[in-house]
Length: 200
Image 1 (cartoon, rainbow, N blue to C red):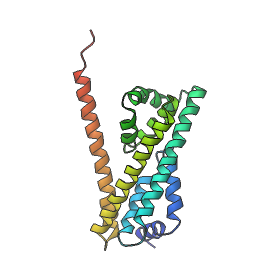
Image 2: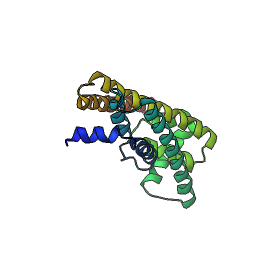
Image 3: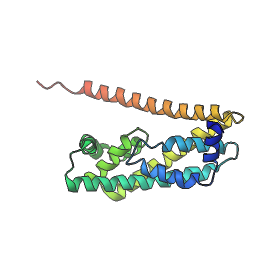
Image 4: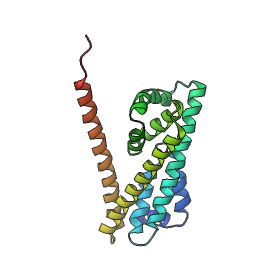
C-alpha cells in the first residue's frame, strides 16, 4: 500500500473525526501537531465524497475552540507559578499587544504558526476577560476551520482524479496564505517602527 492509499484510508475513516478533534485541541499547546494539514487532507477527499466537509469543519472548529481554552488555562497556571520558561517569555512579548488589539490579535494569531500558543496563553496569564476571549476564540476557530476545509475541498475538486495533486494544492495554498499574512505583518511592523520618533 503506497502513501496516498494510507492517507486516503486514514482521512476517509470514521475515526478521522475524533482524531481531528483531538489534534485541533492539542495544537493550541503543542503547535508541532499537524491539525491544519489533517483538516486539509480530509477536505481534499470530501470533494469526491470520501468524507463529510461540514462535519470536518465543525469538528475542527470545536477542537480549536476547546484547545484555545486549554491554552488560556495554561496561561493562568503560568501566572500563578511565575514561570520563566520560553512560553512565559513569549507571553511577556505578546501581553502589551493583547491589551491594545485584543480581539483582532486573538483571531489573527490563529493563522500564525506558533502565534496561537503565545496569544491564548497570554490571554490567560494577563487576565484577559474570559467571556471576551471566548467570543474571539470562537470567531477564530470557525474562520480557521472554514478556511482550512475550503482550501482542501478546492484542491480536491480541482484534482478529483489525482488526490495527491489536490493535497499538494491545498497544502500549498495554506502555506502561501500563511506566508502572505506573515509578510503583511512584517511590513506593517517595519512601518510602525519607522514612524516612531527616535529616542535621543
